[in-house]
Length: 325
Image 1: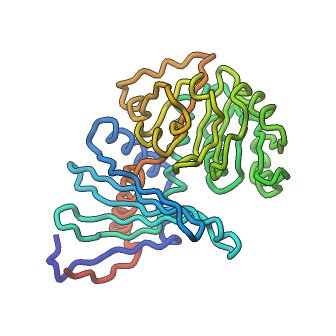
Image 2: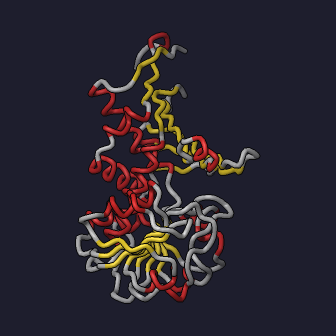
Image 3: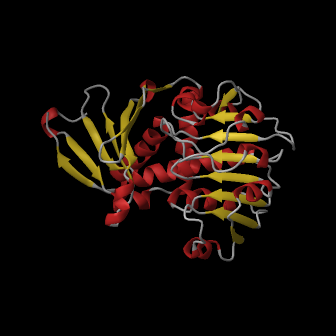
């Protein structure tokens, strides 16, 4: 450990982060985060998630892994008005700390981290919970996260030949369809219930403005990756669906407080890390209706950030600035 007078803070801006986020490394980091949570080695501190007078939503997710000297937080949120300025509405910043001294070691643009780790979590959800013979998928949303979730789904499940998609404005998205050219048929839909009923997999990746389809539209055997609900008041899934489904969550408390569980009174849940750890059996049948409610773990942000920090130090990326104390 350097002397206090020789300490430095590593800065990783967005363009410096993206090349370091290799899919395999992100997937391994996210898998580790789920396992740390399942095994009780990683702590999640209370989530901050508040609406602002500016129209934005500001949140903090933080935690630590004592045995690995891993400590940090992600400050993130959603500012829809950024679109009118040509900017990205999702904003995130991750900071890692030395738990022995409390001094910051690394400050990272967290936008790409959030996108990549959420995509990796969704991929793991499909790997363990979706039927491998799934051929038809329905996605709600055409933004960055919807595209990442869909791209990983198509890589994982090559039998998918048809993607139905719904947009917030109810009109086709030519750029979205162009990105799928040669990989599968892309069909814009205006009847969400019919699209869901015709699909083996449903992915919801929207700002969470309300239920996107009817519970009765979801057939037995369908798997749902629910991505967009991560704040009090947000919702994507309809009333009655969770009561019919086998429900899997990244964290039980977050599911109840800021996830889809805030809208349902009674239903059993299984934490996803327990599936990866083997402490809970999967045993999926052909007629099971499964839901993975993804509220996002601070540990995912921290394990990915640590991977980036180590690679940046080893390979000479980022900007080191003096940070004496």
